[in-house]
Length: 179
Ligand SMILES: [Zn+2]
Ligand SMILES: [Zn+2]
Ligand SMILES: [Zn+2]
Image 1 (cartoon, protein in one colour):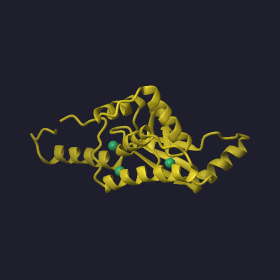
Image 2: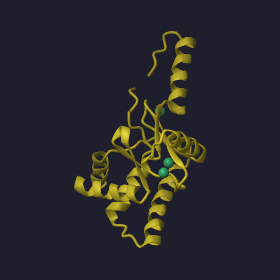
Image 3: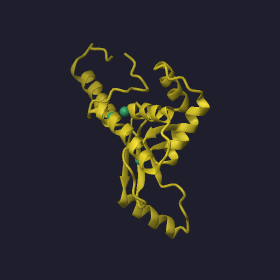
Image 4: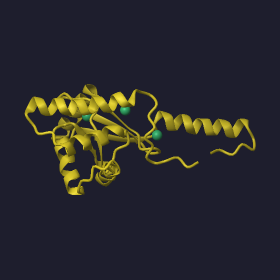
């Protein structure tokens, strides 16, 4: 069985709750600021929150269409721009894709994305310590950072466990072909 590059199987947390929380966060954010939460903006946020793998605008458009929520890609782009501008979603530059924001950030924090190069799973962490060190390093170089985001490629815990399992199976059971 070939592993999908875009797995949505999330087993380490209550993912339904995670999606509900993300949608609730957008609702509260817009209500508090008097911003209009159109059905499309809400649906785009829900689609983003459903996947812990960053999604491209066309993937989102397709996902919406499958649910009978047809929207032109340009409108989806505009909804994404809105969510990013409001800090509710992030653009992952290295993948030209988007991710729902896990939590609001403080000004001094740097956002770190741990991106799995096997399955695409992306975890978001915010760190004051990294922000402090980076601000210091930038200042000593006379550099004024525009972005406060780090994208780090690697292998996620699940993919590492899977690779380890395959390696073990290869050692222990001769003749047992892996997936
Ligand atoms: Zn989740
Ligand atoms: Zn975030
Ligand atoms: Zn992975």
